[in-house]
Length: 160
View 1 (cartoon, helix red, strand yellow):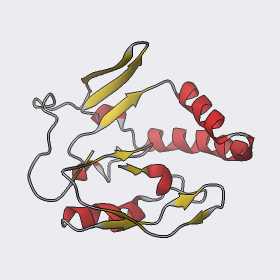
View 2 (spheres, rainbow, N blue to C red):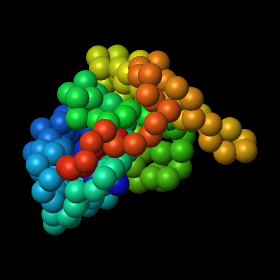
View 3 (cartoon, rainbow, N blue to C red):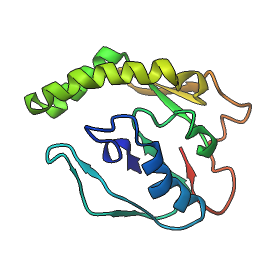
């Protein structure tokens, strides 16, 4: 699993596609180990490279994972359906007062990102949080085989 919080940074909230392609997607597509440099949000610096070996499925998690530049490389796009205000509240609670100014900028940046490059209409699956757990439904971009959650081919990793 790759968390996009490790790819983004204070200076590049959404302008990280090139780094992700070079460090992760291109090596995995060739069947090679990927190496990405995770960002430390408190130190405001990138750390040492971390290996990400090819696997039958590599989950890329985070806001922006469904952007148009990445969709051709995805086996499936899952959209976690959660009201924005609730997700922003969770993030603020997780990060504490230390990151308060960050969240003010994040809200505007996320809105601008999805206005320019919406992901939800392309989602193969919608994941809904329910009191008893999660419900998974076909998404607006579902293909006829969406019920079969398998990699599309043997060989190099497929990104979700």
